[in-house]
Image (cartoon, rainbow, N blue to C red; front, side):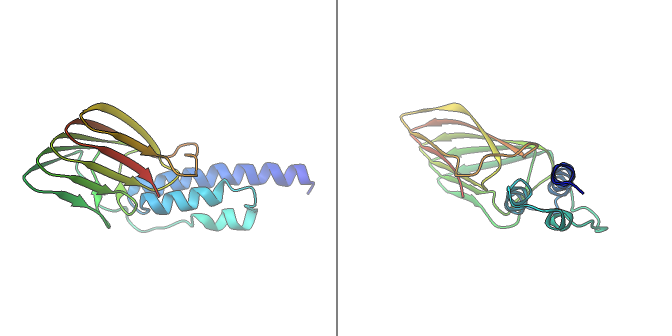
Length: 179
């Protein structure tokens, strides 16, 4: 096999591995962080045929339970924090009065290619941590507050999950960062 043919085969394996990763994260078999780590390997220049064939082995395990399409969180004079292994709904709404919202999505499972987190906050800060390699879109506004976004070092690959963070805040900050 020539070097050009081998390069073409590796490119085809990359596309197949990426598609399998997308299915696995959509079914909840991979967390966003696991997806991000594996996608980085798939698209690294040093990936070879053997590594790509093993990156997402076929699994006959049934898919994880599907999270609800919507989730609503209401907090008054208290903070809300979600981290560890949890299911991110397709649409999450957090209404906070005098409290902070902290979401850590690195170990969260998602069932949709794109998820929206909407936060309405009066006198409270919002913090969202996503794994590197996940596409993040920001919207909304902060009145008397700051907006900070750190996308990390790794670009989102083709077909990466999309997390939309929409924040409407009065006297509060929004911080979104990739780790």
